[in-house]
Length: 371
Image 1 (cartoon, rainbow, N blue to C red):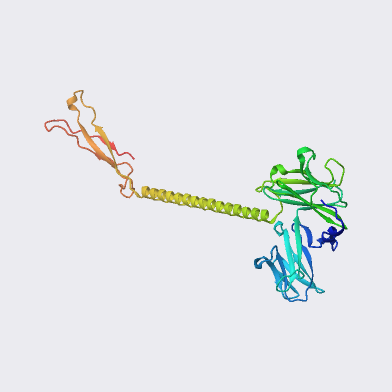
Image 2 (image 1 turned 180 degrees about the horizontal axis):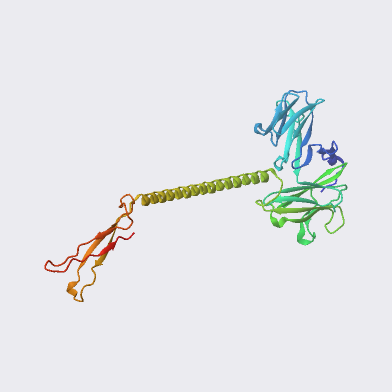
């Protein structure tokens, strides 16, 4: 890091522009903002010419972000406003991809006197004041972070370290304006009214990067000025970082889960209703069958039953040859309509079978019809 002297300071003089608006040099105006904020840059060029242009990097045709011949215009997140002959450009909802070099100018072709160089640095946090007031930065694996540390006085040496800041804990230490080491980088910018600014960057974050960090001026082992921040790196799938991409992914997953749940409930309801209908139909079929069977049984007449009884004649002599028998058949009628009328007791006579040569008188037996 170099201390300004004579002509060198004339060309590389840094000063704060418009209070907290940003930093400005003789060549480049630098603005730093936290991600999600807005930034308004001043194009200190007379705007009496019709065409006003704001572009990025090399300002080729495809790099033009907004242009107009009117006093004001807007295109997406970019807008132009002409105030008292000087126009301003505003960018809303800054993202990390907005970091870089820009130009604003007038006329059809840029010349050295008709455009202004601007740099915008989008950071995750700004650290100033008491080092004990630590700030926590939530990040995702694979992402990058940029932290701005501000100091009120200049010291040649600057560094970034982790945890105890001893030995391997010192990630970057340099006396140059910028330094890059592996995934870590540090950059120094001086402002002549508000002190100095150190920008710390860590790329391709992993969960092992989580911890407490210190950015400072001087030596890590000394009590020189430093700022502290805590980095919390979580996996991209389970991160709770409140970014629009994570919120969008979470919403989409939730919608898919709700849709899948609704489809599952619909299938279960359909199957349940189908089973209920089948059970009801089966029950009705069995009931109809049983009723038809009972009706059929009742409509059938009982078959006549035949009863056979043997009637014997009174005993004659002990001689077996004198016994004579006859067989009588009775018919039971189920309906009273087909029965006999008269006495309840009916007498039927049967003629015994005797030999013709017998001189004995015929024998009779009385048989009562069972009720």
